[in-house]
Amino acid sequence: MKTILHVVGARPNYMKIAPLMDALRAVPDVRQILVNTGQHYDEAMAKGFIRELSLPMPDRDLEVGSASHAVQTANVMIRFEQVCLEERPDLVVVVGDVNSTMAATLVAAKLLIPVAHVEAGLRSFDREMPEEINRILTDQIADLLYTTERAAADNLAREGVSSERIHFVGNVMIDSLLRHRHRAVPPAETLAREGLPAGFLDGPGGFGVVTLHRPSNVDEPASLRESLAILCAVAARLPLIWPVHPRARSNIERFGLAPMLSGVPIVLLEPQGYLEMLGLLANARVVLTDSGGIQEETTSLAVPCLTLRDNTERPITVEQGTNTLVGRNRERVLESVDEILATGGKRGRVPELWDGHAAERIAQHLAGWLPRRERTREAIHT
Ligand code: UD1
Image (cartoon, protein in one colour):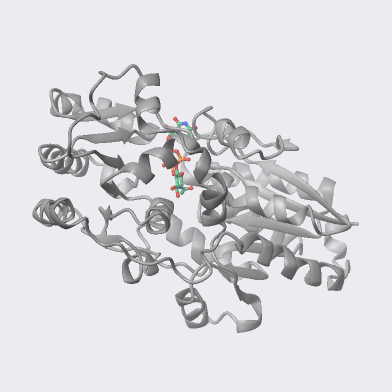
Protein backbone atom coordinates (compact mmCIF):
# COMPACT_ATOMS: atom_id res chain seq x y z
CA MET A 1 0.00 0.00 0.00
CA LYS A 2 1.34 3.43 -0.98
CA THR A 3 0.22 6.63 0.72
CA ILE A 4 -0.39 9.82 -1.25
CA LEU A 5 -0.87 13.00 0.72
CA HIS A 6 -2.70 15.78 -1.12
CA VAL A 7 -2.40 19.41 0.00
CA VAL A 8 -5.12 22.04 -0.43
CA GLY A 9 -5.27 25.39 1.28
CA ALA A 10 -6.67 28.22 -0.78
CA ARG A 11 -9.72 28.55 -2.99
CA PRO A 12 -8.08 27.74 -6.34
CA ASN A 13 -6.66 24.47 -5.01
CA TYR A 14 -9.88 22.53 -4.46
CA MET A 15 -10.97 22.24 -8.09
CA LYS A 16 -7.50 21.00 -9.04
CA ILE A 17 -7.20 18.27 -6.41
CA ALA A 18 -10.79 16.97 -6.76
CA PRO A 19 -10.43 15.29 -10.19
CA LEU A 20 -7.04 13.92 -9.22
CA MET A 21 -8.25 12.22 -6.04
CA ASP A 22 -11.08 10.83 -8.09
CA ALA A 23 -8.81 9.42 -10.80
CA LEU A 24 -6.42 7.93 -8.23
CA ARG A 25 -9.24 5.89 -6.71
CA ALA A 26 -8.86 3.62 -9.74
CA VAL A 27 -5.21 2.89 -8.93
CA PRO A 28 -4.87 -0.21 -6.74
CA ASP A 29 -3.05 -0.19 -3.40
CA VAL A 30 -3.13 3.56 -2.95
CA ARG A 31 -4.27 5.25 0.25
CA GLN A 32 -5.11 8.93 -0.17
CA ILE A 33 -4.97 11.53 2.58
CA LEU A 34 -6.29 15.07 2.18
CA VAL A 35 -4.63 17.84 4.18
CA ASN A 36 -6.31 21.25 4.31
CA THR A 37 -3.88 23.93 5.44
CA GLY A 38 -6.66 26.43 6.16
CA GLN A 39 -4.93 29.32 4.35
CA HIS A 40 -8.51 30.14 3.35
CA TYR A 41 -11.06 29.44 6.03
CA ASP A 42 -14.33 31.24 5.20
CA GLU A 43 -17.16 28.93 4.19
CA ALA A 44 -17.34 30.66 0.79
CA MET A 45 -13.58 30.46 0.20
CA ALA A 46 -12.92 26.89 1.33
CA LYS A 47 -15.36 24.41 2.88
CA GLY A 48 -18.14 25.19 0.40
CA PHE A 49 -15.88 24.03 -2.42
CA ILE A 50 -15.15 20.76 -0.67
CA ARG A 51 -18.86 19.92 -0.71
CA GLU A 52 -19.61 21.21 -4.21
CA LEU A 53 -16.74 19.27 -5.74
CA SER A 54 -17.54 16.11 -3.77
CA LEU A 55 -14.09 16.08 -2.21
CA PRO A 56 -13.79 13.92 0.91
CA MET A 57 -13.69 15.89 4.14
CA PRO A 58 -10.02 16.65 4.88
CA ASP A 59 -8.27 14.09 7.05
CA ARG A 60 -6.20 16.88 8.58
CA ASP A 61 -7.02 20.56 9.06
CA LEU A 62 -3.99 22.69 9.85
CA GLU A 63 -6.03 25.85 10.47
CA VAL A 64 -3.22 28.27 9.69
CA GLY A 65 -5.52 31.16 8.68
CA SER A 66 -4.42 34.58 7.46
CA ALA A 67 -1.15 36.24 8.42
CA SER A 68 1.87 37.83 6.79
CA HIS A 69 3.50 35.70 4.11
CA ALA A 70 6.31 34.64 6.43
CA VAL A 71 4.03 33.73 9.32
CA GLN A 72 1.50 31.92 7.13
CA THR A 73 4.24 29.98 5.32
CA ALA A 74 6.01 29.13 8.56
CA ASN A 75 2.81 27.93 10.22
CA VAL A 76 2.03 25.63 7.30
CA MET A 77 5.57 24.26 7.49
CA ILE A 78 5.52 23.60 11.22
CA ARG A 79 2.13 21.87 11.16
CA PHE A 80 2.62 20.03 7.88
CA GLU A 81 5.93 18.57 9.02
CA GLN A 82 4.14 16.91 11.93
CA VAL A 83 1.56 15.38 9.56
CA CYS A 84 4.32 14.05 7.30
CA LEU A 85 6.14 12.49 10.25
CA GLU A 86 2.95 10.78 11.39
CA GLU A 87 1.61 9.64 8.01
CA ARG A 88 4.95 8.92 6.32
CA PRO A 89 3.58 9.40 2.80
CA ASP A 90 5.22 7.96 -0.30
CA LEU A 91 4.29 11.08 -2.24
CA VAL A 92 3.06 14.57 -1.50
CA VAL A 93 0.90 16.21 -4.19
CA VAL A 94 0.71 20.00 -4.38
CA VAL A 95 -1.13 22.18 -6.90
CA GLY A 96 -0.83 25.73 -8.17
CA ASP A 97 1.20 28.55 -6.71
CA VAL A 98 -0.18 29.63 -3.35
CA ASN A 99 1.83 29.91 -0.14
CA SER A 100 0.58 26.49 1.03
CA THR A 101 1.96 24.91 -2.17
CA MET A 102 5.48 26.16 -1.57
CA ALA A 103 5.45 25.58 2.19
CA ALA A 104 4.33 21.95 1.89
CA THR A 105 6.87 21.29 -0.86
CA LEU A 106 9.73 22.63 1.21
CA VAL A 107 8.76 20.48 4.20
CA ALA A 108 8.44 17.31 2.13
CA ALA A 109 11.69 17.89 0.26
CA LYS A 110 13.61 18.27 3.53
CA LEU A 111 12.09 15.03 4.79
CA LEU A 112 13.15 13.40 1.51
CA ILE A 113 9.54 12.69 0.58
CA PRO A 114 8.98 12.98 -3.19
CA VAL A 115 6.70 15.81 -4.31
CA ALA A 116 4.48 16.03 -7.40
CA HIS A 117 3.64 19.57 -8.49
CA VAL A 118 0.51 19.85 -10.60
CA GLU A 119 0.46 22.99 -12.80
CA ALA A 120 4.25 23.27 -12.86
CA GLY A 121 6.40 25.52 -15.02
CA LEU A 122 4.09 28.53 -15.39
CA ARG A 123 6.01 31.82 -15.22
CA SER A 124 4.89 35.44 -15.33
CA PHE A 125 8.55 36.59 -15.08
CA ASP A 126 7.32 39.10 -12.51
CA ARG A 127 8.97 38.49 -9.16
CA GLU A 128 6.82 41.11 -7.49
CA MET A 129 4.03 38.53 -7.54
CA PRO A 130 4.23 36.31 -4.46
CA GLU A 131 2.94 33.46 -6.61
CA GLU A 132 5.95 33.71 -8.94
CA ILE A 133 8.30 33.13 -6.02
CA ASN A 134 6.18 30.15 -4.95
CA ARG A 135 6.25 28.69 -8.49
CA ILE A 136 10.02 28.99 -8.91
CA LEU A 137 10.86 27.48 -5.53
CA THR A 138 8.31 24.69 -5.77
CA ASP A 139 9.50 23.58 -9.20
CA GLN A 140 13.15 23.59 -8.17
CA ILE A 141 12.62 21.02 -5.42
CA ALA A 142 9.58 19.00 -6.53
CA ASP A 143 10.34 15.63 -8.15
CA LEU A 144 7.46 15.21 -10.61
CA LEU A 145 6.37 18.27 -12.58
CA TYR A 146 3.00 17.96 -14.32
CA THR A 147 2.43 20.77 -16.82
CA THR A 148 -0.65 22.30 -18.44
CA GLU A 149 0.94 23.82 -21.55
CA ARG A 150 4.04 23.09 -23.60
CA ALA A 151 5.73 26.45 -22.88
CA ALA A 152 6.11 25.34 -19.26
CA ALA A 153 8.81 22.84 -20.25
CA ASP A 154 10.86 25.63 -21.85
CA ASN A 155 10.56 27.73 -18.69
CA LEU A 156 11.69 24.79 -16.57
CA ALA A 157 14.56 23.95 -18.93
CA ARG A 158 15.84 27.54 -18.60
CA GLU A 159 15.94 27.02 -14.84
CA GLY A 160 18.00 23.88 -15.23
CA VAL A 161 15.25 21.33 -14.60
CA SER A 162 15.93 18.06 -16.38
CA SER A 163 13.32 16.93 -18.88
CA GLU A 164 12.75 13.53 -17.17
CA ARG A 165 11.00 15.32 -14.32
CA ILE A 166 8.54 17.08 -16.66
CA HIS A 167 5.27 15.50 -17.81
CA PHE A 168 2.84 17.37 -20.05
CA VAL A 169 -0.58 16.13 -18.97
CA GLY A 170 -3.07 18.98 -19.58
CA ASN A 171 -5.16 20.99 -17.18
CA VAL A 172 -6.86 19.49 -14.13
CA MET A 173 -8.79 22.72 -13.50
CA ILE A 174 -10.46 22.21 -16.87
CA ASP A 175 -11.22 18.60 -15.88
CA SER A 176 -13.34 20.04 -13.05
CA LEU A 177 -14.95 22.63 -15.28
CA LEU A 178 -16.02 20.09 -17.91
CA ARG A 179 -17.25 17.69 -15.27
CA HIS A 180 -19.42 20.23 -13.44
CA ARG A 181 -20.47 22.58 -16.22
CA HIS A 182 -23.90 21.00 -16.58
CA ARG A 183 -24.56 21.75 -12.90
CA ALA A 184 -23.69 25.47 -13.24
CA VAL A 185 -26.18 27.71 -11.42
CA PRO A 186 -28.03 30.11 -13.77
CA PRO A 187 -27.02 33.74 -13.08
CA ALA A 188 -30.63 34.81 -12.47
CA GLU A 189 -30.82 32.29 -9.62
CA THR A 190 -27.55 33.52 -8.12
CA LEU A 191 -28.71 37.13 -8.21
CA ALA A 192 -32.16 36.29 -6.83
CA ARG A 193 -30.50 34.48 -3.94
CA GLU A 194 -28.58 37.66 -3.18
CA GLY A 195 -31.84 39.61 -3.17
CA LEU A 196 -31.02 41.65 -6.25
CA PRO A 197 -33.44 43.88 -8.08
CA ALA A 198 -35.53 41.84 -10.45
CA GLY A 199 -34.72 42.83 -13.99
CA PHE A 200 -31.02 43.54 -13.50
CA LEU A 201 -30.26 40.95 -16.16
CA ASP A 202 -33.18 41.82 -18.41
CA GLY A 203 -31.37 44.41 -20.54
CA PRO A 204 -30.63 43.41 -24.10
CA GLY A 205 -26.87 43.67 -23.66
CA GLY A 206 -26.22 41.00 -21.05
CA PHE A 207 -23.62 41.52 -18.35
CA GLY A 208 -19.92 41.37 -17.60
CA VAL A 209 -18.26 39.58 -14.68
CA VAL A 210 -15.39 40.98 -12.60
CA THR A 211 -12.91 39.39 -10.20
CA LEU A 212 -9.96 41.25 -8.68
CA HIS A 213 -7.69 40.28 -5.81
CA ARG A 214 -4.03 40.69 -6.84
CA PRO A 215 -2.01 42.95 -4.54
CA SER A 216 -1.08 45.06 -7.61
CA ASN A 217 -4.78 45.84 -8.24
CA VAL A 218 -6.30 46.11 -4.79
CA ASP A 219 -3.70 46.67 -2.07
CA GLU A 220 -2.72 50.33 -2.55
CA PRO A 221 -5.29 53.13 -2.35
CA ALA A 222 -4.17 54.64 -5.68
CA SER A 223 -4.25 51.36 -7.59
CA LEU A 224 -7.57 50.26 -6.09
CA ARG A 225 -9.07 53.67 -6.91
CA GLU A 226 -7.89 53.28 -10.51
CA SER A 227 -9.27 49.71 -10.66
CA LEU A 228 -12.66 51.00 -9.50
CA ALA A 229 -12.53 53.89 -11.99
CA ILE A 230 -11.92 51.39 -14.80
CA LEU A 231 -14.85 49.26 -13.66
CA CYS A 232 -17.15 52.30 -13.43
CA ALA A 233 -16.21 53.29 -16.99
CA VAL A 234 -16.93 49.77 -18.24
CA ALA A 235 -20.21 49.66 -16.31
CA ALA A 236 -21.41 52.69 -18.29
CA ARG A 237 -21.46 50.33 -21.30
CA LEU A 238 -22.38 47.01 -19.67
CA PRO A 239 -23.71 46.13 -16.21
CA LEU A 240 -21.17 44.24 -14.14
CA ILE A 241 -21.44 41.50 -11.55
CA TRP A 242 -18.50 41.39 -9.13
CA PRO A 243 -18.11 38.62 -6.56
CA VAL A 244 -15.70 40.46 -4.29
CA HIS A 245 -12.69 38.73 -2.74
CA PRO A 246 -12.39 39.47 1.01
CA ARG A 247 -9.06 41.24 0.44
CA ALA A 248 -10.61 43.64 -2.09
CA ARG A 249 -13.77 44.11 0.00
CA SER A 250 -11.89 45.11 3.12
CA ASN A 251 -9.61 47.47 1.18
CA ILE A 252 -12.57 49.25 -0.48
CA GLU A 253 -13.90 49.97 3.01
CA ARG A 254 -10.53 50.76 4.57
CA PHE A 255 -9.56 53.25 1.85
CA GLY A 256 -13.02 54.89 1.90
CA LEU A 257 -13.68 54.08 -1.76
CA ALA A 258 -17.20 52.62 -1.46
CA PRO A 259 -18.87 55.90 -2.58
CA MET A 260 -17.24 55.50 -6.02
CA LEU A 261 -19.52 52.54 -6.63
CA SER A 262 -22.80 54.00 -5.49
CA GLY A 263 -25.38 54.46 -8.23
CA VAL A 264 -23.18 52.57 -10.72
CA PRO A 265 -24.55 49.37 -12.32
CA ILE A 266 -22.04 47.14 -10.60
CA VAL A 267 -23.48 44.46 -8.36
CA LEU A 268 -21.15 43.48 -5.54
CA LEU A 269 -21.64 39.91 -4.37
CA GLU A 270 -20.03 37.87 -1.63
CA PRO A 271 -17.45 35.33 -2.90
CA GLN A 272 -19.46 32.77 -4.85
CA GLY A 273 -19.41 29.00 -4.88
CA TYR A 274 -17.87 27.06 -7.74
CA LEU A 275 -21.16 26.27 -9.50
CA GLU A 276 -22.45 29.85 -9.15
CA MET A 277 -19.17 31.16 -10.56
CA LEU A 278 -19.30 28.75 -13.48
CA GLY A 279 -22.81 29.97 -14.28
CA LEU A 280 -21.72 33.61 -14.17
CA LEU A 281 -18.61 33.06 -16.30
CA ALA A 282 -20.32 30.88 -18.90
CA ASN A 283 -23.04 33.49 -19.47
CA ALA A 284 -20.93 36.65 -19.38
CA ARG A 285 -20.32 38.76 -22.49
CA VAL A 286 -16.92 39.64 -21.13
CA VAL A 287 -14.93 38.81 -18.01
CA LEU A 288 -12.53 41.31 -16.41
CA THR A 289 -10.11 39.63 -14.06
CA ASP A 290 -6.64 39.36 -12.57
CA SER A 291 -7.04 35.69 -11.63
CA GLY A 292 -4.91 33.01 -13.25
CA GLY A 293 -7.55 30.30 -13.10
CA ILE A 294 -10.26 32.45 -14.63
CA GLN A 295 -8.06 33.18 -17.65
CA GLU A 296 -8.06 29.42 -18.23
CA GLU A 297 -11.73 28.86 -17.49
CA THR A 298 -12.87 31.60 -19.90
CA THR A 299 -10.65 30.12 -22.61
CA SER A 300 -12.29 26.75 -22.10
CA LEU A 301 -15.76 28.36 -22.10
CA ALA A 302 -14.95 30.50 -25.21
CA VAL A 303 -15.90 33.67 -23.32
CA PRO A 304 -13.76 36.80 -23.96
CA CYS A 305 -11.50 37.65 -21.04
CA LEU A 306 -9.70 40.94 -20.36
CA THR A 307 -6.88 40.47 -17.89
CA LEU A 308 -6.10 43.59 -15.86
CA ARG A 309 -2.41 42.75 -15.60
CA ASP A 310 0.71 43.48 -17.65
CA ASN A 311 1.75 39.86 -17.80
CA THR A 312 0.37 36.37 -17.55
CA GLU A 313 1.94 33.08 -16.50
CA ARG A 314 -0.60 31.42 -18.81
CA PRO A 315 0.42 32.72 -22.27
CA ILE A 316 -1.51 30.00 -24.07
CA THR A 317 -4.77 31.69 -23.02
CA VAL A 318 -3.67 34.75 -25.02
CA GLU A 319 -2.07 32.91 -27.95
CA GLN A 320 -4.83 30.35 -28.45
CA GLY A 321 -7.65 31.24 -26.10
CA THR A 322 -9.96 34.18 -25.50
CA ASN A 323 -7.69 36.17 -23.21
CA THR A 324 -6.28 39.69 -23.86
CA LEU A 325 -3.84 41.45 -21.55
CA VAL A 326 -5.05 45.01 -21.05
CA GLY A 327 -2.92 46.04 -18.07
CA ARG A 328 -4.38 48.85 -16.02
CA ASN A 329 -4.86 51.19 -18.94
CA ARG A 330 -8.38 52.59 -18.91
CA GLU A 331 -8.39 53.51 -22.62
CA ARG A 332 -7.19 50.08 -23.59
CA VAL A 333 -9.82 48.38 -21.44
CA LEU A 334 -12.62 50.49 -22.90
CA GLU A 335 -11.46 49.93 -26.49
CA SER A 336 -11.36 46.20 -25.85
CA VAL A 337 -14.80 46.17 -24.24
CA ASP A 338 -16.24 48.14 -27.17
CA GLU A 339 -14.74 45.72 -29.62
CA ILE A 340 -16.09 42.73 -27.73
CA LEU A 341 -19.56 44.27 -27.54
CA ALA A 342 -19.46 45.02 -31.28
CA THR A 343 -17.96 41.78 -32.58
CA GLY A 344 -18.28 39.19 -29.82
CA GLY A 345 -14.49 39.26 -29.30
CA LYS A 346 -11.97 36.44 -29.57
CA ARG A 347 -13.50 32.99 -29.83
CA GLY A 348 -10.16 31.21 -29.46
CA ARG A 349 -9.65 27.48 -29.44
CA VAL A 350 -9.22 24.96 -26.68
CA PRO A 351 -5.51 24.31 -25.96
CA GLU A 352 -3.95 20.89 -26.39
CA LEU A 353 -4.96 18.36 -23.70
CA TRP A 354 -7.47 20.66 -22.01
CA ASP A 355 -9.89 17.86 -22.67
CA GLY A 356 -11.14 16.79 -19.25
CA HIS A 357 -8.69 13.89 -18.88
CA ALA A 358 -5.59 15.48 -17.33
CA ALA A 359 -6.16 13.87 -13.92
CA GLU A 360 -6.46 10.44 -15.53
CA ARG A 361 -3.12 10.99 -17.26
CA ILE A 362 -1.49 11.91 -13.95
CA ALA A 363 -3.03 8.88 -12.22
CA GLN A 364 -1.83 6.61 -14.99
CA HIS A 365 1.68 8.01 -14.72
CA LEU A 366 1.69 7.62 -10.94
CA ALA A 367 0.38 4.06 -11.21
CA GLY A 368 3.63 3.23 -13.00
CA TRP A 369 5.83 5.47 -10.87
CA LEU A 370 4.68 4.53 -7.33
CA PRO A 371 5.72 0.87 -7.35
CA ARG A 372 9.19 1.91 -8.50
CA ARG A 373 9.60 4.28 -5.60
CA GLU A 374 11.62 2.58 -2.91
CA ARG A 375 11.28 3.57 0.70
CA THR A 376 14.96 4.21 1.29
CA ARG A 377 14.43 7.57 2.86
CA GLU A 378 15.33 6.95 6.48
CA ALA A 379 14.95 10.61 7.37
CA ILE A 380 11.18 10.11 7.36
CA HIS A 381 11.45 7.80 10.37
CA THR A 382 13.37 10.10 12.63
C1 UD1 B 1 -4.37 33.60 -2.23
C2 UD1 B 1 -3.20 33.21 -3.11
C3 UD1 B 1 -3.49 33.60 -4.55
C4 UD1 B 1 -4.82 33.04 -5.00
C5 UD1 B 1 -5.89 33.53 -4.05
C6 UD1 B 1 -7.26 33.04 -4.42
C7 UD1 B 1 -0.95 33.30 -2.08
C8 UD1 B 1 0.30 34.06 -2.02
N1 UD1 B 1 -1.97 33.89 -2.73
O1 UD1 B 1 -4.43 35.02 -2.22
O2 UD1 B 1 -2.46 33.07 -5.37
O3 UD1 B 1 -5.07 33.46 -6.31
O4 UD1 B 1 -5.56 33.06 -2.74
O5 UD1 B 1 -8.22 33.59 -3.58
O6 UD1 B 1 -1.02 32.20 -1.59
N2 UD1 B 1 -9.40 36.24 3.80
C9 UD1 B 1 -10.66 36.08 4.34
N3 UD1 B 1 -11.19 34.82 4.35
C10 UD1 B 1 -10.54 33.75 3.86
C11 UD1 B 1 -9.26 33.93 3.31
C12 UD1 B 1 -8.71 35.18 3.28
O7 UD1 B 1 -11.29 37.01 4.79
O8 UD1 B 1 -11.09 32.64 3.89
C13 UD1 B 1 -8.85 37.60 3.74
C14 UD1 B 1 -7.95 37.92 4.91
O9 UD1 B 1 -8.12 39.24 5.26
C15 UD1 B 1 -6.57 37.72 4.33
C16 UD1 B 1 -6.77 38.14 2.88
O10 UD1 B 1 -8.10 37.74 2.56
O11 UD1 B 1 -5.62 38.46 5.01
C17 UD1 B 1 -5.80 37.51 1.93
O12 UD1 B 1 -5.79 36.09 2.04
P1 UD1 B 1 -4.46 35.28 1.65
O13 UD1 B 1 -4.67 33.84 1.78
O14 UD1 B 1 -3.29 35.83 2.35
O15 UD1 B 1 -4.23 35.63 0.12
P2 UD1 B 1 -5.24 35.79 -1.08
O16 UD1 B 1 -5.24 37.22 -1.46
O17 UD1 B 1 -6.54 35.13 -0.84
